[in-house]
Amino acid sequence: MQTGMHTDTERCVRAVQSKDARFDGWFFTAVLTTRIYCRPSCPAVPPKPENMTFHPSAAACQQAGFRACKRCRPDTSPGSPEWNQRADLTARAMRLIADGVVDREGVPGLAARLGYSTRQVERQLLAELGAGPLALARAQRSQTARLLIETTPLPMADIAFAAGFSSIRTFNDTVREVYALSPSELRTRAPKRSLAGTTPGGLSLRLPFRAPLNPDNLFGHLAATAVPGVEEWRDGAYRRTLRLPYGHGIVTLAPRPDHIACRLTLSDLRDLTVAISRCRRLLDLDADPVAIDDQLRADALLAPLVDKAPGRRVPRTVDEAEFAVRAVLGQQVSTAAARTHAARLVTAHGDAVDDPEGGLTHLFPSAAALAAVDPGTLAMPRTRRTTFTTLVSQLADGSLNLGVEGDWAETRARLLALPGFGPWTADVIAMRALGDPDAFLPTDLGIRRAAGELGLPSTPAALTARAAAWRPWRAYAVQYLWATDSHPINFLPV
Image (cartoon, rainbow, N blue to C red; front, side):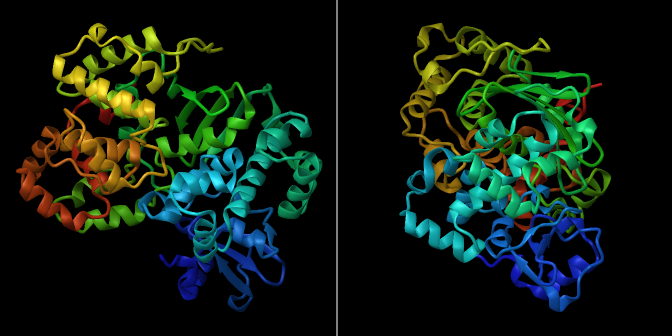
């Protein structure tokens, strides 16, 4: 079992006394005298060390009878980086809970996806996080409810339903318990401007992150590889359609100095939590850039790249199956050709959606829809056609699962067993779809060229040996090496 930072009392006290925002989300401070819990960077005067206790999650604080601080709003801090850098049972469970699985399928559904018994999952989460899956999901529901209360004019009954509560009474009781305010009092305290111009199904919010964040390669990659009809770059923002459990959505994401501006239009508000979780994964917003950059900077040849543009993230995906399909479409062709291939599939087999702002027309086709495509209509070489049809058929029948609950090493091995899947394809899927922070691409031509120019070994074996010192952050080293090239993926569109 992993031991979280919250067990290191001395380190936690130092972080609270220095109001260090880097640790927001890593742990929470519960104050015994006031019975509130805070993020480490809370602007209030720090309590005496003897009055502090530390917890690994907001849910654990709530379970212990503490309520959220009204000044620092600890429920809105970035998520713990631990769940992005680990692939054990707890990390996979947390990713599934963030994706709304407990609300939709209950704890038995969560356990079934993980391949463990309900009792094993509950025991592991309680031991490491101080709260079981129901309490963790409840904390997430309360955060979603607060967001809807403060940023939309929706009736409270609709908010309770959208946030995943089973009844109005449970909704009211939970909000009062967590925030020490009734839902109507929360709305009264919200800035009036936040309610302006909103409509049912539409929502504007801020996605927090740990600084620094370099948006160039993050948004540049998404914009340069955008599939027409599904994605676009417009007016300084990345827009795309979302396939969600209860319906579909359209998201607009724009980088700001201290947050990501997010505008969501959803066909069913019950998808709000899932949509936010997937957007955070897409932009790698729960990463700890200081820890990552410090380790990469220890390599004297990488240090100048890190110092020049710190805070690079890994551009990921909102749909793992979609990314795997697009990775196959992009094998041995240019970025423009890959976009063209994907756009043809979208037009022919994607579900049409209505974009109030125009520009977006379809959801990316589901694996089931692609598995039904006549292979003879695919404009690609025979060997890649075989790779494509094998991939989508296994995704469609469930024999290959790329979901957030998957084990990275096991899934990578299953990908390598598919026809036409070499290390590059498997590792780029591991990096951008599965979220493995240590995925590495030593055979990538851009990586080898950058390595050679920096004086790093440029052969795959020698580069892999050198990169051992970069673990477990080799996927971030890839971003720094790629960024030495003048390809459009490395620059924000003008």
